[in-house]
Amino acid sequence: MATQHSRSAARMMMAPAVILLLGWMLVPLTMTLWFSFRKYLPLRGGDQGWVGFDNYVRFVSSSSFWPAVQTSLIIVGGVLVITVVFGILLALLLDQPMWGQGVVRILVIAPFFVMPTVSALVWKNIFMDPVNGLFAHLWKFFGATPVEWLSQASVQSIVMIVSWQWLPFATLILLTAVQSLDGEQLEASEMDGAKPLQRFFYIILPHLARAITIVVLIQTIFLLAIFAEIFVTTGGAFGTKTLSYLIFQRVLESQNIGLGSAGGIYAVILANIVAIFLMRIVGKNLDA
Amino acid sequence: MGQITLEKVTKSFGDVEVIPPLDLTIEDGEFAVFVGPSGCGKSTLLRLIAGLEDTTSGKIVIDGNDATEVPPAKRGLAMVFQSYALYPHMSVRKNIAFPMKMAGIDQAEQDSRIQQAAAALNLTDYLDRKPGQLSGGQRQRVAIGRAIVREPAAFLFDEPLSNLDAALRVGMRMEIGELHNKLETTMIYVTHDQVEAMTMADKIVVLRAGHIEQVGSPLDLYRAPRNLFVAGFIGSPTMNLIEGAEAAKHEATTIGIRPEHIDVSAEPGVWSGRVGVAEHLGSDTFFHIHDTGLAETLTVRAPGEVSFRHGDTIHLNPRADQIHRFDAEGLRMS
Image 1 (tube, each protein chain N blue to C red):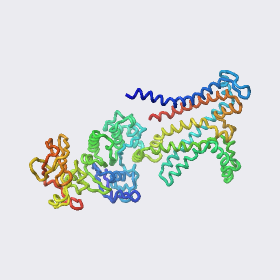
Image 2 (cartoon, rainbow over the protein chains, first blue to last red):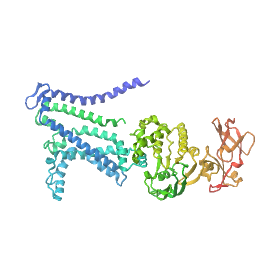
Image 3 (cartoon, one colour):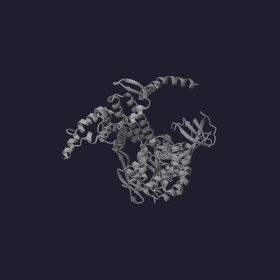
Image 4 (cartoon, rainbow over the protein chains, first blue to last red):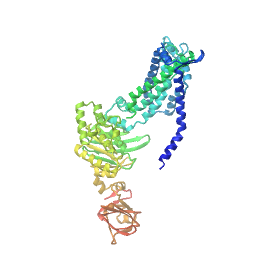
């Protein structure tokens, strides 16, 4: 008897949250769409009216566009591979009973709590500095010429920094998945004659598939938007300009809001393509 | 082909000794049931035989070969787990094929064994389903199928029926019994349910706190329990245990008599009491009798429908030749 009444009451009570969230998403999106069709140069005449698809055409035809898309995908892909592979290994390691397990687990999670700007600066100055960095000293110790990380291997360096930040996240999710594996399944496979590696590939990895899917999807969303790490290390130089960084340059350095907004819309489309693509590949694991 | 011998096997977890030195032989083709209350070490014992736990000391001999240090997969034993431990991401066919795939058996042979096992276990229509789409009984059969195709020297069952509902349990009990008759392979079966033990076993091993209390056929255990623990554990409802003056009359510390060995009558008899709860099962009626002066309650079985009501006075005649006598240590006196 309560159904009709309670259902409408529930809707009423949910409404504020839904409206707030919708507004939160829709207002900026609509404004971006609006500006992307206008010629808007804040320091050179302000809003100068409709220009149709001009901004979209200019953004794509710029020589920086495709390299930026490529860099974005390389960074996202590289970080995903590293965090998932090492995340699984770390999760398996942390699942083993050992002395000081609690402390070790907290330490492993710790990098996730460091702000991106801070961790990128720490990496840049303490590890990767070609004169005084730890890596430079290590290289010199072995008699090698220090690598100028951020100019010679710039994209790789950023992948390394971002992977370091996101590894704890992947490890955490995968560790909980490893812990939820039924011990009897492992024992059964052991009795069935599966060797440790076979147990990993036939039992543990399929069990982790769902967790890996979640890690990949969530990380992709965040990794497409990384900015601080690039801003404080290379400033977009040496081929580290991602799509989001390009948009930043268009808006703030070129002072062209219309062009930047068009780029923003492209970024939304790219993110959706990547998300759909990933969900197709790994999504079948979600309903297993 | 499947004789298993334990020689002075012990198992400790840290300082806690769960299995004190234990000797046991299970003959080839025998259906042995380990039974005992929770925490008596019966599952640990099974896992020791399977190789999933290492023995602290002692020897496990399978088919005359020392298997104490042999890894589980090489012992030629197949185990059916309480949770079935099916691989959820594999179809029934792949689940059953898994041990053969690991052993590197060729595809044609695999297929024919799968077909055989599926036919024997009524799984042919479900081969392409995932375990999640099966009922409890079907999952149980898949787990058994996975064990059969390995053609093991012995099957180990770890409380395999405890997750099934009562009706299904009776059915699966029969199926496992049939399977044993057909395969004639050694089976070791762990359960806490004495009805399962009585109905399925060739040999029952009653365990308490890691000790073997008695080994024997179900009827041996029923007719001549070696001590009070076995007497109380085997049989349903449990044996009536009487201490004091009545026991002294039989020159024992405790006497035991099973509910089915006491005759009831309305005429004065050996004992008398007041009827408490009566459980009418149709075929039998169980009366709980109070105020007998012997024990707090006595349980008696009367065949068919007997008309005693709550509070009635009832007279009891124990059958003298069915009285079990136990001494001060709780051991059987012959």
